[in-house]
Length: 306
Image (tube, rainbow, N blue to C red; front, side, top):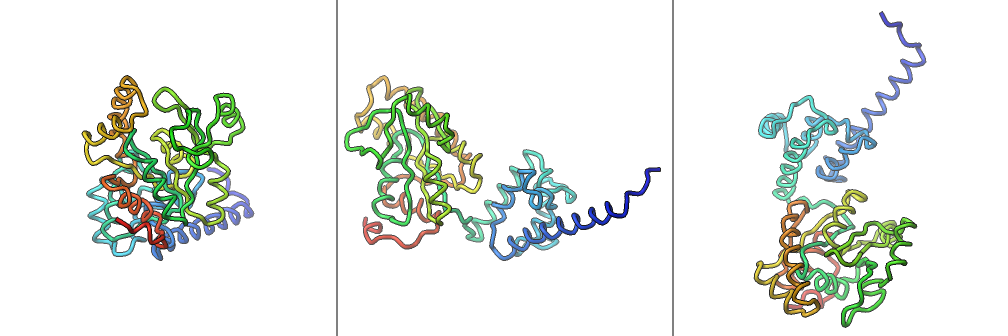
């Protein structure tokens, strides 16, 4: 038989257990009161360092959500194929995916919008990301639009420090080496784009809402670095319209256009990785949908013009 642990160890273990239970109870209370959304808690639970969320039983998690009682709980677990003994941190990959899908549907049905002041707007080439983000900058002053750094040359009408920070390859290398970029990627096998980290962190610390208009590779990096970010995928009304927009802007050679269209098909396949999809049929409408996901209601009169 193993010897009993010293009395002081038992006391310390008991105190730690009580603290852990209280921390989990606080998480459940946050869900119940709406201080945190179920989706935010579920996503946090994947990190072992987030112990209250990571160790919360699935049964406790679900019953913390208003209107989910024992009867619904039993049916939900059976439908999802999850054991009542499971903890959030112990969910398998497919179990977590199924539970997240259920939570997203539940929140949508109950009109629960996850609070987030950081929104990432991404999508395929020529879908109009820049046009939509420019409309937001000009009509929604409460949103800070992040300015990316890029190694490509300015296009006609683009302004340094407004549309992009235009840097050479050496300058971009320094930004990477200094850890100054939240994310960066090489896009279309040509130029590099990256998001300066400091302005984003400073704006969020001041309670401001921030929009990042970046490529899909960058959006994936932001999700890893800042799980609280909401990812929005901008879609074209149709494939034919995307082709028309790419050819119509006349900023690439025919060879480059063909290469970008091949990339666009691959990019469109990534839309399921995003939290929301917005179809860019009309720029003001698409911009309004993106801003609504930030829960910003105080907009200028021009933003409602059609």
